Image 1 (cartoon, rainbow, N blue to C red):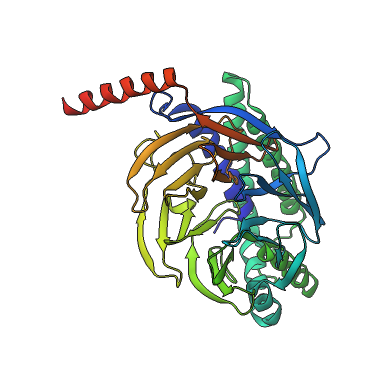
Image 2 (cartoon, rainbow, N blue to C red):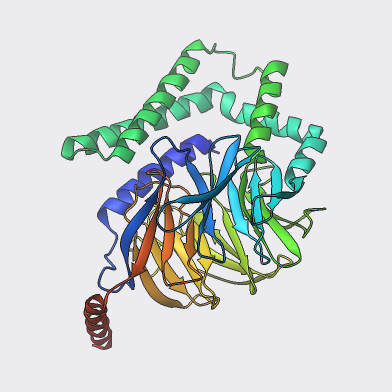
Length: 419
């Protein structure tokens, strides 16, 4: 199985290529337009994720640890902030208006003013730390999988092929910043594994990993699997989405409202590039299962209710680019909104998967990454995170003249479909 690093690189290349050449425009069909951006100061930490509170304010978690939680109004002013002990990776508002923050195997519950009400170890982190034997087995398997000479040779070959593809692309046109970053990342990986290959003896294929290497890999696995992809809550439970304890999938854990206990209710979700967004509303849990190109609806006990979606390079009848939809959210009426990485495309569905509207395309830097979205509870604005530019885009409803043009375009499309 190819490494997660190589998988990420391949997704970036696919996303950039797809976003560039085959996606159909929805400008004439969309309900919203990009109006403005909320950008922090130049020296501000990176926004990792965000949501909106009941007042329509942005609740953003930032930084690499210790991190920070910011309350931001629509003018971009930070009205409140407080420190979080770890790198905050996910944030959400509970039904009672209090806040959940999660990161690096920790869960935090704050009131609206920032007072820490409770902190707890995430259930997956507690399980990881208690199962030394399983961690050791996973570490040895991972080292054997990636450490043999034949595997290293295969990686070098793959990296060289990707470098050649991007270099050919650069001969036709100037590479985008995302493509340049991808080329640099692949080149660095190629150099690293080429040196490793040169240092390997012919008999290294038969050698098992050293104890030092095993312990180092256990530390790597713990850091990787401690990450929390998303957190959300119902009135009486909290749902924490994490990497699977073994393998490469994702699991959803259910704890009590007080963060106690914890059991896996959904497992084996397919996600790419460290992303798996799971959100909940009164209807249950909705999963943006990006590597499966679908949204899946579960009840609060993890029983599947329905699913919808498919891969579609045009981004019209299905989800475009690589590994989408990446994120999901809701409005006050229970409609489901999806966000597609690379494309910046936002769509509105009913709870059974019927497409209601194309919201619009956000101008963002392409890449397989978190594109958190939220629908304002106080107006019709919709928000999306551009992780690379470290800002949040605000989409507003189109003007009356825009609406007239959109209606005409929809009527034309309907007539074309009838013929």
